[in-house]
Amino acid sequence: MLAQKIVAILKRLLPLSSGAVGLHEPRFEGNEITYLGQCIQSTYVSYVGKFVDRFEDMLAEFTGARHAVAVVNGTAALHLSLVATGVRPQDEVLVPALTFVATANAISYLNAIPHFVDAEPKTMGVDPVKLDAYLRDVAVMRGTDCYNRASGRRIAALIPMHTFGHPADLDSLLDICQRYNLVMIEDAAEALGSMYKNVHTGRFGRCGIFSFNGNKTITTGGGGAIITDDSDLAQTMRYLSTTAKVPHRFRYYHDRVGFNYRMPNINAAVGCAQLEKIDGLLQKKRTLAAIYADAFSGIDGVTVFREPAFARSNYWLNALLLAPEKEHDIEDILEATHQCGIATRPVWQLMHELPMYQHCQRMSLDMSERLQKCLINIPSSPFLVPKCHKGSPSTLLPKPV
Image (cartoon, rainbow, N blue to C red; front, side, top):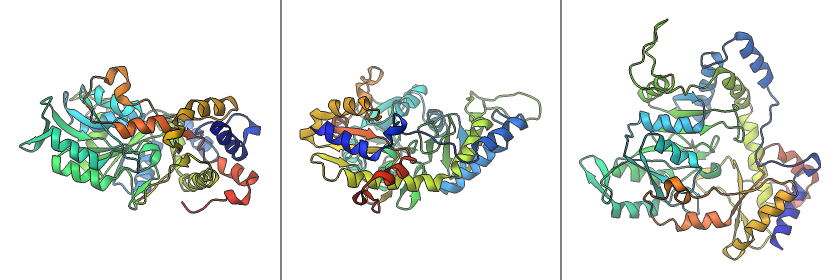
């Protein structure tokens, strides 16, 4: 039985003797407590303080971007990016059906409309070939703007999402955005540390966003950020994220509707300590991915998803893919793993199947629907690597990923 084979491999690799194994858990083994103490002692625990500025500088340096703007979460980062790049109410935004709901929700916050597009098997991100063919049928240029022939609405933007940290095919998607004059905003919520052709994700569109939720590669508890090389755009986003307050020593004057989205200093203190360890965390995650790929290589009908050739992935969440003839086993696998304390999960419910988005226009989503039937995420915390090494035979030692 396939479920039993998968459970046996995971039991052999994972530290079940210490209790249940989560999908992706944080560790606080660096300067987190020291920096939190300094933050509290300073009394600057809200969005003013040295750790917010330091975290932004560290993030910009790590990604290679000119600017980073720290905010309260990844959803706020998406919302702010859409507002700042000029997406308007009733505009349509092209977005994958295979994504976390926050990607679509951020569009709805503007009273804009998600327009769902399909994934490709190579990246699990937006399929550029299929999208290009689709837009030739449904889109028309009027002046410099792209419009939907059917709805008459402007198609303003594309949000590619880097699924489980694996970069989408960004060059091909950028080419489409340039031809149709679409704003590209990268949803890199899961992709901190992932590279597309040796350039960090988030740097290919007008801006890119990250999430630092408790289950991400690094965490600030709750938090997110936007990176961009556009100085004017960064300034606008900082201003909007602090309630659009006009700078003044003591007067409170706001000249447009803004948002209370700035990351608190106390969260940034945790983020600074976490970013100090990012290189080691990424290496451990890539080692874990190699161990999984080797361990499951002999199981008929199961493969571990590997990064596309043009990318270097952070492997945020490792994913098992079941062959079509094994799809009927997915519920048994999920039940069996959870019964023995191993956290697994299927991919998100596709966006067009959720009640609030069933009315939204969409292309054929056959690959997204296939992935929904066959994909299982397995434990991916970086601290699992030493456990895997300790109890594993030599055949499970990591190979280059």
